[in-house]
Image 1: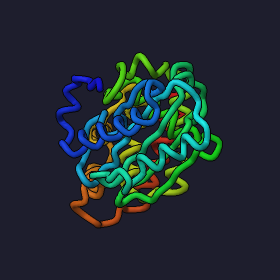
Image 2 (image 1 turned 90 degrees about the horizontal axis):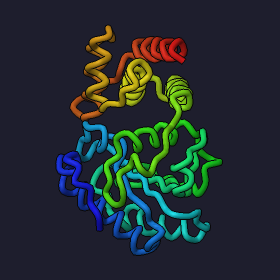
Image 3 (image 1 turned 30 degrees about the vertical axis):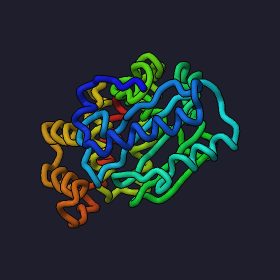
Length: 258
């Protein structure tokens, strides 16, 4: 097994490292030489992972498209509790190598699996049933910041995501949060990270994005409360009006940049 010496790997909790290696072992045991690579994305790659609170985001790449039975077998191998997840849950996405090497503005995955002790189980076996914007932005994170658990460096596997696609995905994500989760702390934190990306083409952790947003005039109390909710140190709900104002302001700014 080839493990990337990336120093970020060593900042992750030992149980997360061990879990990721188990994911690789399970995939290798089933896919054999068809497994190209496995990568951390999300907070594990960008920084700010909170044990027990954060999801672990893992993307795999295989050499070919898979049949339905093969996809179902991978789910049986990786889904919690068959493979116990040591944090809130794991968001695992498997792609065909061709789809990530030459990306299109769609979801493009073979398998999308969410499972864990505190995460609703969710699985889809093709991209048609899922909004594309989540996966476009995650592939962008993979290319620029992915940590190789197994296989070659992420930037050699994941092709370039055009900035127009990324900004469109960001706007769609903002609108989704406005419609479905406008008072949730994830809305605030993801909006800040997206805004910074739109302004500076800089992907960062949610904590770093909050510091950046504060320096650009966003209400510090709202930002700190969102971080505290994410960390589980408060259960005080966010001010609905302030969240709505922030999301709409960021949406307007991203539209102007686009």
